[in-house]
Image (cartoon, rainbow, N blue to C red; front, side):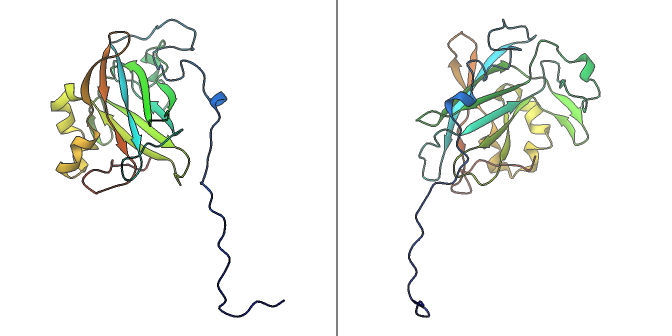
Length: 206
């Protein structure tokens, strides 16, 4: 049978857009940047801390089973990567990269070492943690930076943070939030994937 012109079309079935990640994608300790392997003792130099928060959808609902990847400089501001001119002096006991995922409440947690500041082509970088987010319904990899409240003067001079309109800068500065389970200081920052311009987390091209 030939369909009639302009006849109503049958709706396509709704489906959530991937990617989807099984539990086996993660190992215990993947979110601990201070250890070279999940079962290894901490060997990184510097002061441990926790970074926690929630990944939220538009409207404030949790983004469940999203994957977060964190990478940062060591306590002296060096990356163990050939693109860093001083990479050979980087802390050999610091992994500098970790992966976490969000639970049913959208919560995530990383354990790391307070990063050092460093100089790059854009200027003096304040201590910060780089985050990337991927997950169901997210059409591309989202990247942002998390700054720490203990470095207010360095934050004010950071070329990335200062490139944002002043009202948006606090959205990338974590707040002190007590202590983690091991007594290390904890900082928290929620990430809103989409929402009001005054509340949505700023993301960057990476």
